[in-house]
Image 1 (tube, rainbow, N blue to C red):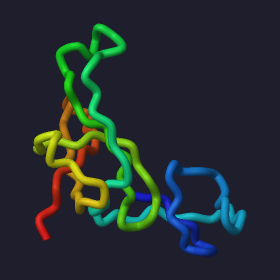
Image 2: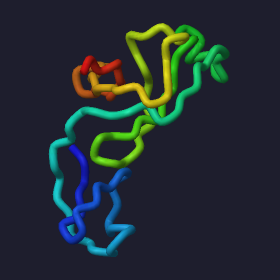
Image 3: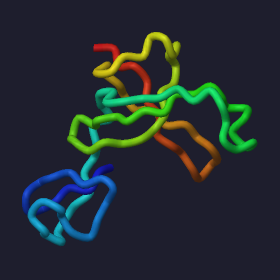
Image 4: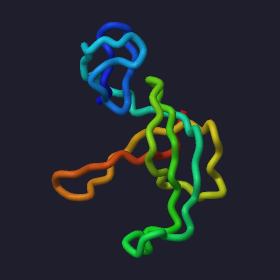
Length: 110
């Protein structure tokens, strides 16, 4: 779900109390398409904290959602040498617990 301004229909992420385009406080929550494009990325090879040592290497991505906002997440299911800016992505949700699921992104087959 994404927050969408009821005044100018701009998608807002992160959610905010007013629209940064038209300053309207009115909004609605609308389903997101789950599609995006890789805007930027970095592959992390060295954990900055011992907690993450078991996770390296991993890819951190800036994904431009089809609706417009950018979201920072991870790329999964891809060899790091195959990552290319502009590649089509789709969201998948990884369950960290029964209550918490986080968005990750995979290559979208067109």
